[in-house]
Amino acid sequence: MKLPPVAERLGRNRFIINEGNPHIVVNQAVAKATGTAERIIAVCPAHVYSLAEDGTVSVEFAACLECGTCFEVASEGALSWVYPEGGFGVQFRDG
Ligand code: SF4
Image (cartoon, rainbow, N blue to C red; front, side, top):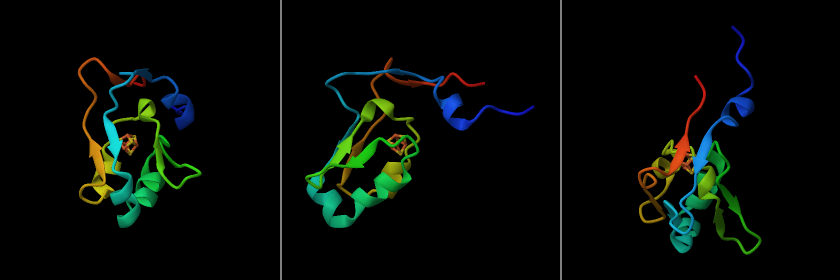
């Protein structure tokens, strides 16, 4: 059986957004000083992170797939990452 493209499969997911209560917070100074900014931008499969014009890291936490990869590559103190509060976050719809 041939599976649909990954982008199409990910598009089936549902995201319940906890507006005003992000589960990801970047410490901009530490992220910049330690190279965490570049690493988290590079590894996130959902493109949650991007570099803003002012050099800070923007975070679109609503698109997070909760894989934890960014937390693994971040230097200590650069990133606060927890699972979204119960009832919020991604709901996987593939399979
Ligand atoms: S947990 Fe995964 S999907 Fe979410 S921001 Fe980190 S790397 Fe991206």
